[in-house]
Length: 498
Ligand code: URP
Ligand code: ZN
Ligand code: ZN
Ligand code: ZN
Image: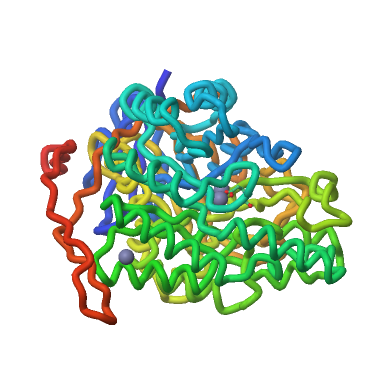
């Protein structure tokens, strides 16, 4: 029951090329791209004059209906994926987060059972590794070889819940290396976060502003450096999730400058707003911005992170969409450490990147496609099935209107959450029409989604080719170790044959 559609007169925009072209989607896949295509009988024709025709957005970081900090995130896999398509995103990668001691396979099955009946578009899964042992090592292999998982996240924060120590992280990264999987890190010094929280509470600061004060930027930068150092010691690439500060971004740039394989992911919240919101006199307003690592109060951070996306030092824009309503945030009314951490983003991500990136002249339209879709498809190895407009790719396509304008508001958004951290922001550049597997699911400001129609997409762990680099102690000019180039053994995609 796939639908067929012909998109006429648009400007096809991939990460590397832009041209006038029609796009024909038959049975959910892109069948043809070219000028003056003629619609076969029974095919719906959509006019895309003055619109960009882009690959559907990919959000590599969501937490739909996540059980977290004593409650459950309110955007579930149905509402979350509806919010996604209304903003031009057609693929998300969510996180399975097992509790310490829990079987990874059991947790994976749990997430599949939550997502499969509800998703309105395709999705993938990362798996968090929250403990270490023989069983975890075995189950990581099964997830890679039989469940299509190719990325594993570790938490360096949330002590006593998800946090692993350096020794565990070393073994987990080593296992990622053996399996060809990508290691992902939540980088904050969890021990010092805990001490910082005690110190700030002891000073009598119990409100949301205590959140950032207790976990300042240097705790993120230090952990980022430590994670990269450990990944480098086992010669495996590493992906830093939710890069929230200049300090952490600088660390990533530094290591990349030495030739290390490090990827960085800013999120919509970090590009769109600043953490001074946590000082708002209205408690509910302030608490809505609490997430970890904190959105930084330095208001120039967001422009800095956008600049690093433009230069390629940071790579894909996620959201960390993990939403809690006022009554849930209120669990931390007298103690900021109990405010459930998380913000919205999946609906507004694309417009925020367009507004703050393209409208400011920092990004080209091709850059926009790269950071909102293609880079994630490549890094998480679902490319070119996702993340590209070309023959043979999935029919997940967005008609992007660079001139359309709206004011973001909780009154009109498609989330279940009762607050929007971008409230009142005027953005120019919107998803006019969103097509999922050849079917229009968003147009004329209306959703036409089909719950449960999305599929779980398997990814393959392919091992990132690692260049022959030397790691030197710069100060002493001493060779620490040398990494030999490894032969690439993964799949080879020949786009010219498509
Ligand atoms: O505050 C956040 N980031 N909540 C979601 C969990 C995580 O660390 O990604
Ligand atoms: Zn995290
Ligand atoms: Zn390095
Ligand atoms: Zn997250």
